Length: 101
Image (cartoon, rainbow, N blue to C red; front, side):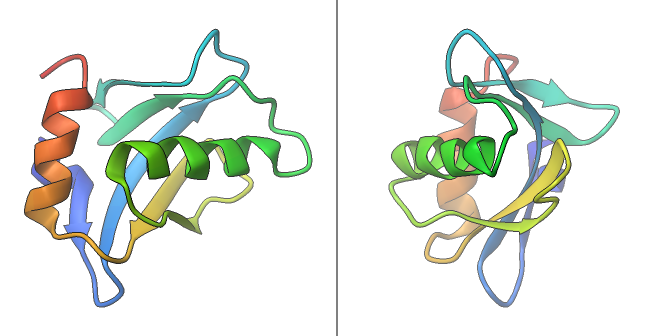
């Protein structure tokens, strides 16, 4: 399933995520198999881009790489772009981080 969520593009690696805001802590949840997205929980509220900034900062810490929101800036369902990692690198990191794997 994770291979369907992590995709290669000309610009880098794309990951489909679903964000829950106002969480108790920042964390990667499980894979939502129905939506084919990785659940991300963020403490920030979705006000004035605070949650998006928190997502990018949180994921940057996990992937040790620049993170850009490729689509879904005003939605809970987003696609993030990691320009300087390989798909294998990302899948390996996610397998360590995701709770349902």
